[in-house]
Image 1: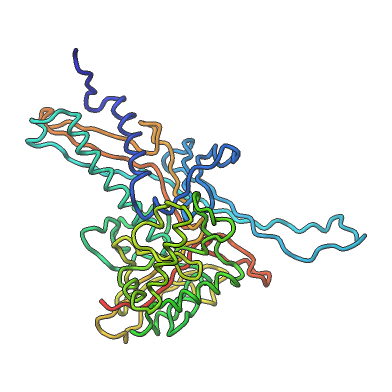
Image 2: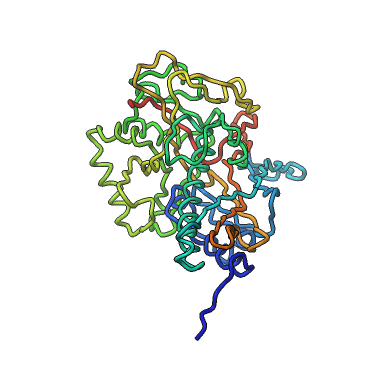
Amino acid sequence: MAQTTVPAGSPLSRKVFGAALFAKVVVASSFIKALTGDAPKQSDAEAKLKGQTVPDMPVVRVTDLSKSAGDTVSVDAFDTNNGKPLMGDRNAEGRGQKLSSSSQDITINNTTYVVDVGGKMSQQRTVHSLRGLAMAQLAGYFPRLNSQQAMVHLAGGRGSQTGKDWIVPLAADADFADIMINPVKAPSYNRHLVVNGTSFTEGGLQLGSIVSTDLWTLAHVDDLAVRLSDHNMGLQPVKLGDDPAADDDPIKGVLFLSERQWSQIKTSSSYQTAVQTAWARKSYGTKHPLFSGEPIMWNGILIRKLPKFAIRMAISENTNIITAANRYTGTESVQAVNGSLSAGYAVERSLLLGAQALASVFGRNQSSETGFSWLENMYNFDRNMEVAGEAMGGMAKLRFNFDDGAGNLEPTDHGVFAIDSAVKL
């Protein structure tokens, strides 16, 4: 029986392999995958039509196949109403409180990565084998890229750490803005904390005074738990779909520490207690990947390590912040890390995530009808082949204007705190 073959560049190849690449990238183990919720139930009609995942996780993925290259997806938020009720027979007509809302447009664009699988291999293997090699490369590349894009957006800066594993270039690179697709916004004033002794100082100006003893401890996690409980605009808790305690005892937030910040926490005498607390919560029955590996849990906050990358700032390095004077306008300014910070130290940024911190949006690639497309190019007299993966999408940190309790609308990173501390290199 003759074997069915799919010629290079055929429409069937684009559709079948494009859909397969989309599926592999979405389910691949990555920083962003563990933070994304399941698809909504059928009763959530509007979200289902947009292909939006549940809103209880830090990353909300929207797969809106009506969108195309260069288009935008709008995300809306309504502030919580408050104010005094009307008592007894007092007239209520015309005295309704107006809804306060804000919107954010997220741009999607086409991201392409090309793999050349030609050379002598193309003379010895079939096109199908070459596609398998290319698929393996692309299925590893795009999750790494997406993880780094998510980290940089959530952190509000790229930092200066480099290395072979970094795909997103430094912010000074001419292609940085295009690769990030949406603008990287500095942490909002009320979501930016800097370790200062045994507590935190709000706002990034403190970076100019940070010293080598401003290190992470579990006592700082206690401080965070209190802040989340009484903060006027606290984070929405994280609810895992298979966590039996999700409603009665939701996770206050997921704190991601760099490898060096994690090593500081491990010196605490209560570290083993935190390990046991995480295992106790996992024993309720959840099998969510956030509880895989070696997480710890303290005062309702789940703590994990960032995946090998760090948002690191060197001594005297500039980063963008929002000062107290600009907290209601969101205007960014430049702040340098303390030039007198001890030699051999730097600053690294951790992330405390609640629900709906980041939106990851996929549109329709017209050649495959999915969020990813598969392109093939034969050259050198059809002896060599290039394969390209195209991703139609974009992501952005969710920021809305919320009432600060005093009648001021304050731009607020909806689901993330950026927290800076000193680290020893």
